[in-house]
Length: 79
Image (cartoon, rainbow, N blue to C red):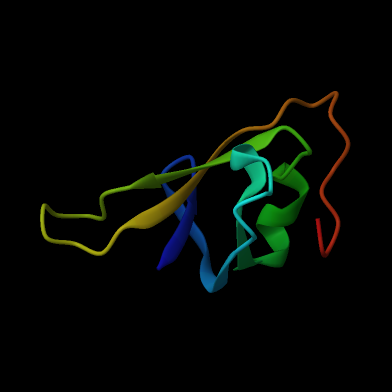
């Protein structure tokens, strides 16, 4: 699946992993994504990932990265 920020394709999903059922529901799914170097400064600790429909009704779902305030620390590899 593709990864988008503010309507622009910036990467791809590399892996999806489900954590044990005892894990907090808010962090139960871990998604590994690859993001273009130029888009990485826009990713902050408070950026959220949302699953959305792709470009058409039958299109593959995408991961839309939203939010991310300037005051939040930037994400690093592995976050």
